[in-house]
Image (cartoon, rainbow, N blue to C red):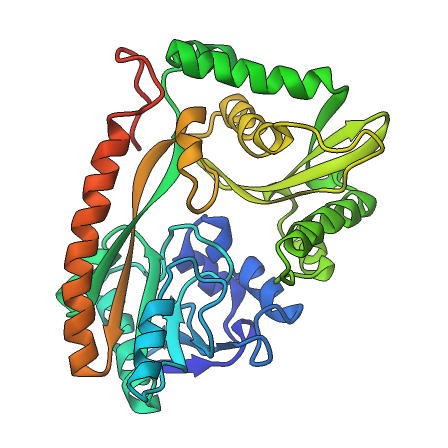
Length: 382
């Protein structure tokens, strides 16, 4: 039996997490924090309509994070051109259904189940819901494992993109990693880090209970300032960050920069069982003003150092950013799947995606030729 839920708290956390695994963003606690603090709601254009599947004994055997969207913000798989095409033809692209982690371009499970048979049923239920509700489309974003193949077998359209991840090699520490880079890249990284140090900046990493409410408040001022500088509003509130700090403290890593004893910048990372995820950064510059390369230090190099110290396999620095290639990251393919109700648009998008996948593959092949490592010191692909 499949049921629809307007709040994730309607589904027991233990049952959800038993199916979801250990990736922090798909956890009940993370998704509940988004809903409890209003970041995800009908008002924000993210109406929850999660799917739950139970067996004859009412045991949860499948679940899917699912949202009805009235816009395309906060998704990182960009379909603005599709929406504009619908509008030009006098059709409504919104509302649409998406299975994703709001505001989080991180791959992970979306069809939460122990078997592919149950995953197939969840996928079919989501498409059926879109059809019954008159939604224009259904989108499965940043899926992984067997999910992309299941979606393709179900007739959904496949879309590829590229992110840049740091993948652990056989390095013992940051010095080993640095030595594995080509000479010009190694020199560049050392220069960038030296400029931060020469500016009198000190860096402190705090995890879990080490992070005080004052630290969170400072981080939030930095986070908000990043959005204001881009003339937009932040998606998340301080209440959200305080809730995840309480619900999943050991997953939180805050990197703080100080100058003259005053905090001037901060970056938040989320720690998974085998990898680190870079999420948000911002600065509120002190009396000395702008510090060159501080973003690279807090968002890249500190993360790489921590991943090496903690024995993590990978560090995902966020969406986009080919500039990461020169700083020790490598290209990795991400996948999404799409169902469009309108046959004509579905055919047109299918043809477009065929060409887009070829272009993405060509670009990734070109990027592979410019990896920053010496030929005998490649990163380990995970």
